Structure formats: C-alpha cells, structure tokens
Amino acid sequence: MTFTEVDVFGVYMAPISLMMIAAWMAIAVLRFALGHLGVLRLVWHPALFLFSAYIIILGCITLAVAG
Image (cartoon, rainbow, N blue to C red; front, side):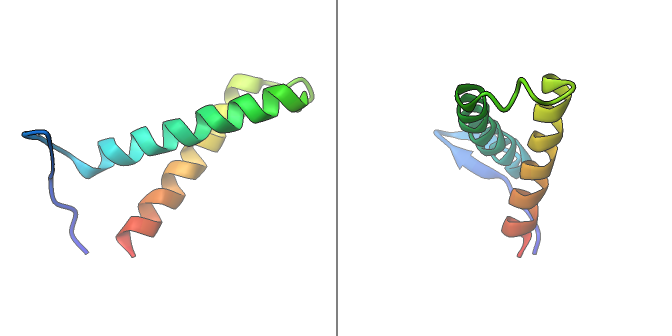
C-alpha cells in the first residue's frame, strides 16, 4: 500500500504527521493513567520510558495503516 497525502481542511498533510498526532494523543492518555496509578515513579527514567512507548505506539499505528 502506498501512502498518499491527506486533505485536512484544504491543507495537504503527510499521513505520518496524522499518525504522529494519533500516537501523541494515545501517549497523553497513557501518561495520565500511569501517573495517576503511580507507575511512572517506579521506572528509572520516566521521560525515556514515555518516549519509548511513543515510538512503539507510532510503529504499531504505522503497521496497522500499512496493512
């Protein structure tokens, strides 16, 4: 499957930018949930943990869209 530009209110955007926004929203929910449960206090480097989770989620979204 080839990725083509997406028309968002008259502005053509690369599909990876929309996937990055979706992954960012998923990370925002995950960060809130893990912070509320106190899990982020247990990891060695919370920012590195969240960045790694962002990359994993972005990869999963990309693979799901690519089919």
